[in-house]
Length: 148
Ligand code: ATP
Ligand code: MG
Image 1: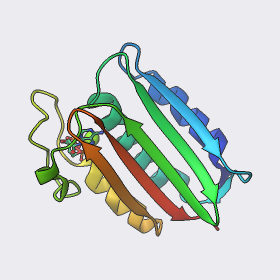
Image 2: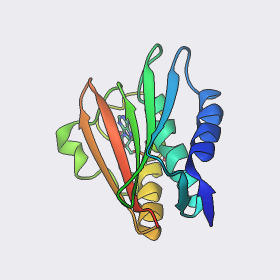
Image 3: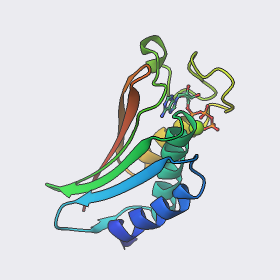
């Protein structure tokens, strides 16, 4: 199940751009000389779909969402960064629990399952998920996989 990560990244970006808010720009960039990865394309797509959907949903109009892929030293790293509402520190340790939603979501709808699915799928692909977030500053999610 080997595929071209850049082609894949460009395709997802185009699809996600269609469901982004007014003037929310999804910027995709790849670094590294290699483009080929061996991962389950559908599982990975579902993960990135969930993370970019969150970035869209939890940030406002007129913002950038940065979507980056990198293959370096046998590691494939995928990051999604937004400048949205962020995640309160006290909520961060519960983030991957099913049905958990942070306390600053207000009227933004959701079930709290997306990230639980991302964590499970990433684990199935022998990868790791990590994040950094600050309230009213934004959030950065990182997926890393062994790039064989
Ligand atoms: P859904 O199941 O439809 O994805 P959801 O978006 O509420 O619902 P998750 O995607 O699992 O659920 O995210 C869990 C919670 O983490 C969210 O409810 C939100 O509080 C917080 N969260 C996730 N991503 C972000 C983000 N990019 N910025 C701010 N908060 C986020
Ligand atoms: Mg979600």
